[in-house]
Length: 358
Image (tube, rainbow, N blue to C red; front, side, top):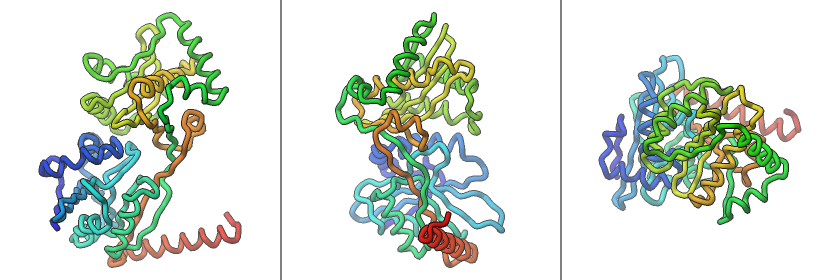
């Protein structure tokens, strides 16, 4: 068994980089290019990147991209999965069968580090998946006090080989009527048009129009302004980009970034001009891109990613959950005290649940 720790993605040998190609079938945010863009645009001087790798004599490889904050000595020392609010799913990057023993080997440097990490955290993970259970078992094997917690809900659609027409006809009547009515209203407007950009010469204009729409929408400005342009461009490079745009007289009024990779379509970002609410252009544009990914891309799943929003339930068919793991090091004072606090909190919730208190 060989164990390594790298501080840059670019330092990984080619044999390790190749493992990300296997992992991106799980989700686009397990790909090598995803982590490249995430690290380059959202991680700064206050984050230390650590990429832990273990490979064994059978050729199995496990890679765990992680990071830690540069904090003062009073706070617990925390090392986390390399994720933030841009991430919808995290998973260990593995070449083959995933085992707790292999992950425990990869995580061994964390326990033996001179930093003596107090807390280790992974989120968001697919609840009940082999990766989730293997990570939990690996941390337990290393002697950490390990706990599970809910991260967020995830609504998704199982296409099941249907055409877009079959899918649309099965939607709630209220949503179908809204889409049809608002579509007629939109196209009755002079200069109204919809477009889906996948790359090529239209890409730069598409990025600029997306940013224009986002900045005129109701949404808070991006804290890391380089992330989204970088993501759109990497998706175009990979053939994953489906950037939907709505225009009136060549002025962009709505934008949606969908990522189509390995048979899955992820609805990543939505925005529209807050001054044009009467068009309900978001529903019209969603239906337009949905037709494209079902009938042309032939995806088997459409994923609305993060959140339990009511509108997602109308478009999607199933709900699943993303969970996290937090593990405390009992060998450090702060790790031990945090574990005690967590244990008492868990006990309190169980007691209150048993007696019916909130």
